[in-house]
Length: 572
Image 1: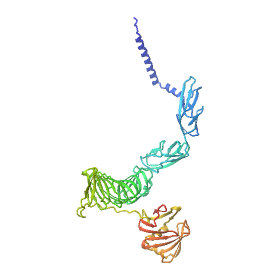
Image 2 (image 1 turned 180 degrees about the horizontal axis):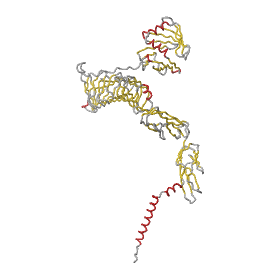
Image 3 (image 1 turned 120 degrees about the horizontal axis):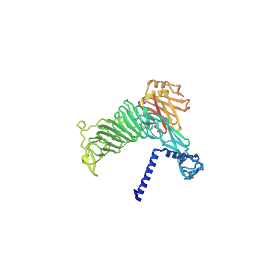
Image 4 (image 1 turned 45 degrees about the vertical axis):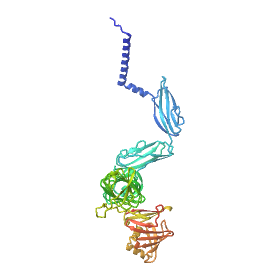
C-alpha cells in the first residue's frame, strides 16, 4: 500500500536534511581542526603588522606564504608620510602614522589584503632620562620619563635593566622597586642615543641613623625618609624643595634644624625644645608627647596636633599658616612675630596659653589663657556652647553666627593662687647674627675650612696646621698667644702655602706675607686679642674680624652674603 506524501511533508524532510548536514560539517571542523589550520597557514600574511621607522630610513615589508603566480600591489595611505615600492620597500618621509597595504591576487582570482601600520619617527639629536634619582624605597613605583631634543622628536625609547629582579622598566620607563639592591637602568632611542641611571633600592621606611645617611637620601627620589635613632645627635637638614618626599622623625635624643621643604613632616619623637624650623611652607604633623618648636623669622609653617595629651611649645618668630588641633593637648604660643596665628580647635579639653594674637576657630569647648601680647586674639565659635573659657585680664571679641560680642576673661590670679601655670617654655634658638657661622661640632673638631671668594672664583683651603693656630688664638690658648708675641721674623709652611710672619717682640700685631699659593704677594696685618677671643685681619682694602661666640659659633665682621664669601667646614 502506497503512502502518499504531501508537499508540506517533503519540505519538512528537506529542512531536516539540510540541518543534519550543517551539524555534521561543524562537528567535522571541530573534531578535525587541522584542515582549518592548514588553510590559515597557507594564507598570505605580512611580515610586520606594526613597524617603527626613522625619517629617511627604509624597511622591507615581506609577504609570508606567497602563492605562486600571484600578483602583488603595494599602496600607502599617505605618501607624504611614507612611500612603498612594488617590492614592499617602505621609505619614511615625515613624522606620522600610515597604513601600508599589499593587495594579493592569486591565480584563481582570490584577493587577499594585508596591512602594516607604520609609525614614522623623527630621530632625536639628544636624549636624557628626565627624572633621575639615586634611591627609591622598596615597593615604590617610579616613572623615569625622558627628555628629547628637538621637542618635535617622537623617537622611540627602549628601556633595559641590569637586574630585572630589582627593577624591570616597561616600554615607557615605568617600574616598581622589587627588592633591595642596586640596579642600572638604561634608555636607548632608535637613533642610538642613550642615558643611564643607577638606583639604590632601600627599605620601605628609608631608615637613617646619622647625618651622612640623611644627606644621601634627602632629594634622592625615595618617597619616605625615617630618621630613627636613640643616640644623642644633631641633624641639620639641608635646604631645598623635596615635595615628593615624606620625612618621619623618631629620634628621642636628637636636635633637629630643618631647612628643607617636604611633602609632609611627621614628628614622632625628638628631644624636647629642639626643633628649629627654617624652611618656608612645611606641614608639621605632631605625634610627639612633648615638643618645642622655634620658627625662624624668615620661615613659615603649618602645624597639625595629632597626638593625645601632647604638650607643644611654639616660639613663632616667622609665620604660622595654621595650627589644627585634632587631639586633646596643651599649647603654649610665644614669639616675636606680630602676625595673627590661625588656630582651629576640633576637640574639647584643649589648653592654650598665648602671648601672641590668635585667630581662633572653636569647634569644641576649651581653655584659653591670654597673656600680654595676645590681647588682639579673636574667636569664631560654631555656637555658644563651644565658646572657650577665657583666662586673663582681657576682653576678647567672639563671633557666633555672624554676631559679634565681647567676652571678658577671668582675671588671672597671682602666681601660686591656683592659676593656670603651663609647662616650661622652649629655650629659644635665636636666628644667626649677620656674619655668624654655626658649626655642627665644637671648634676644636674642625679639620679644615674652604674659603671661597665667589665674585672672582677664588678659593683657598685652611688646612689643619694653620687652623689649629687660629683656634688657639680664638680659645685664648696661652701657649699659642705667647708664641705669637715672641715671633719677630719666621717663615712657616701650611700645606702648600708658605707664609712669612714679622713684627716686634711682645706685640700682638704681626705682618703676614704670603710667599706662595693663590694669594702670593698679598700682605695682611693680623692682631690677636685674647681678651675678646678674636683675631682682626687688615688687608689692602678690607678689614675682617673673626670672633669666637661659643664652642660651635664664630662671628665674622663685616658680614658678607654667601654670594660674596662662602665657608665650608669639614670635621675630624
